[in-house]
Image 1 (cartoon, helix red, strand yellow):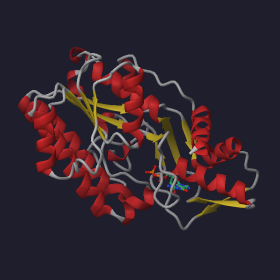
Image 2: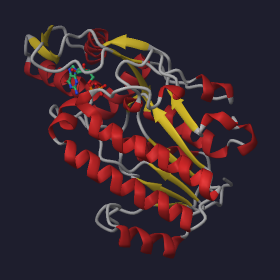
Image 3: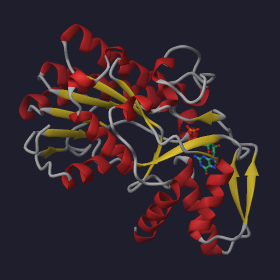
Length: 313
Ligand code: GDP
């Protein structure tokens, strides 16, 4: 990309899309293209066709998706599979038809098999059954990866897929029912502090291990990959890259860290009635790191930044 390239950010209001937009602007990219959901419904083929025909973006970050935490995923699987298949099929196909120079498709590490060895390597894709709580979402994302690879093979496109670890950051979803764990717990712990509640409920056993990345570190990785010389991307990579920090914490440790940052001194209680999901999910981002990328924000720093943002909004 050069600073004048026309860059479309699909999903610019979301956690990743908004981080991408901020980082692109900071790096001097000024020719950015967005559409609100009300102006362009990406699940509708004709609307997406018309948009690409009119705008002809040179680069596409496909960060538009229906996303949610463990409860939302297991409650609304039809919405997760339908919306994601439609959005990505429309955007990927139109990007091919309109000669987009490079597209970056965003997935998630939940595409890897439930019992895959950890840390997760890209080559574990499609080697076993998925975690049932978010299978519908994962199947849609796997279809997106295979779609990018198939277009690369058949049409010579340059479509890259990235699988970020659990992300958190500005514009996160703090709704206790539909959020992911980090903002979900932050919202609950903050309210408990404000109300003087003696306890906070943490779902599951507190034992699952997760890796978290600040959304702007992830955005920086995406911009980095958008600019990587095609010749440096290994032939056998399938243009698939994990994005992660390799820093693991248990849900209990995460909850304790949030309590520290928020300044809550009550007690954590664990609710075994809620699902743990997969017990360990940590990426092996060495393929990305080998190209020269490193993240910057530690978990403690990121939680403090997010809490500041939460307080101001
Ligand atoms: P996952 O990483 O795809 O499993 O999705 P989540 O971020 O929703 O959940 C991660 C882990 O945190 C699971 O073991 C949850 O049971 C646990 N957890 C504990 N408290 C909460 C909470 O308040 N919200 C969410 N979403 N998860 C929680």
